[in-house]
Each structure stands twice: as C-alpha cells, then as structure tokens.
Image (spheres, rainbow, N blue to C red):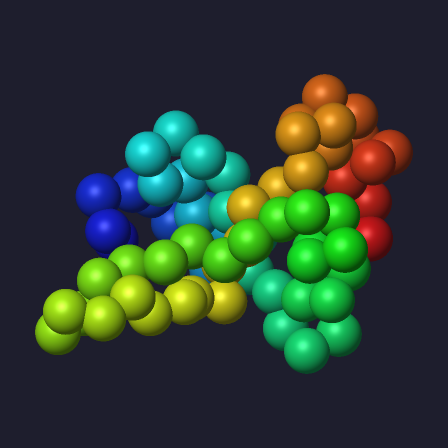
Amino acid sequence: MFGGWGVYAGGLMFAAVIDGELLLKTDEQTRERFGAAGCGPFMYRMRGREQPMSYWSVPAEALDSAEAMRP
C-alpha cells in the first residue's frame, strides 16, 4: 500500500504507516477533530493530481500518550 503497511483489526484496515508516519482512518464524524488538531490527510499523486485519502496524520502529542490517542 503506497510503500507502507496497513494495520488491521477484525478484517478492517483502520490505520496505515507510510514513510514512517502513523495515519488513522477518518470519517465524517472524526475528520473535523483531526483537522482542528492540525492534522492532515495523506495525499497521493494520481494522473498528475494530488488525491487526498481518508487516512490522516496523528497529533504528535498523541504518539506519546495513550490518553491523548483516545477518541
């Protein structure tokens, strides 16, 4: 997957690690919170255009705190 790894639970992919960066799957309910935390979507190039994916970066402070990672 884009030179990275998919993270699965129960047969569903909920995260990816691409170029050493953890990305979590977002949806309409969570995307706004990720944006408010200064995170952004993983972008890939397709047919000469940048395409956003539903996998977003994680706030740096959440990587060191299980509490900050909670929804």
